[in-house]
Length: 323
Image (cartoon, rainbow, N blue to C red; front, side, top):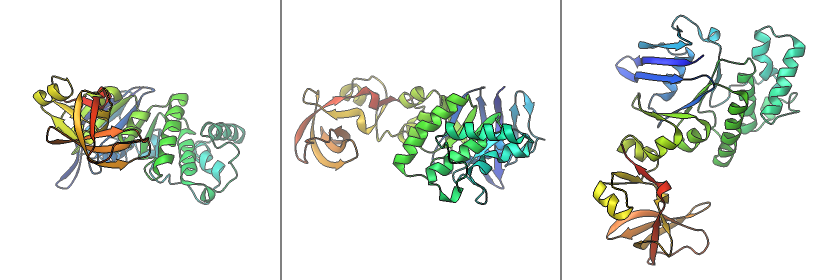
């Protein structure tokens, strides 16, 4: 079974939020809809769920058009940014809700709930009130609740964006494991490329309501389709083919991320440090190379100071070939 979106558009009066999108999600595949705020990715997800009527095109599951199928009969699981848990139910009651609505017997229901809570790292939490949980724990409950009825498709709309950065990174790893272990078919909306690349088998980059690129994470990261996609994916500097050949030894138009140039005594590029900023695990530099400014990185231990002359080596993991 698989999801297929064909020529899908969603309009609000004169405003087109989603425009002519074609997308497929295979059975057991996780696809991330990645793009900046306002690009239409959440609207696309809501149209797939049945929460937004399309203006054109169709959403199909296993070849069957879902146009006449209401939200509650599509068999899809939904997880939103805030989890939308039931505050009057305990953890187990939240997870069991879909099973109860589906007429699943008590013994089977309890066994399924216990198994899911263990899977999401909340074994023994069943009788706790959801209002007593941290934000990360609440999102784990929301995931368990969505998975409980064994949905055909899991739809996640910015499920981690309300959490702080460190917790978001950890939960992204846990969610990726969870999706793999359950064999879930999933469509995930996110504006964070690290999150998308952690979770997804394929990434669809959206801009202004259109899908501009679809591919495996490594492909999208290393070969963004155009300059706008490269900049969105962290390339602060774009070089034409001639400049790229001279600086990084690549005969093509490229985008440079901050990690493309690293301080290295044996490096081939000479530079002068203009500014430095300390990050968690590295030092970000602004350097002058032949009169032009570039970003570079240095180790936290004994980083160079503004005014220092340094040598830089090229790290090709930070170089993206555009187009």
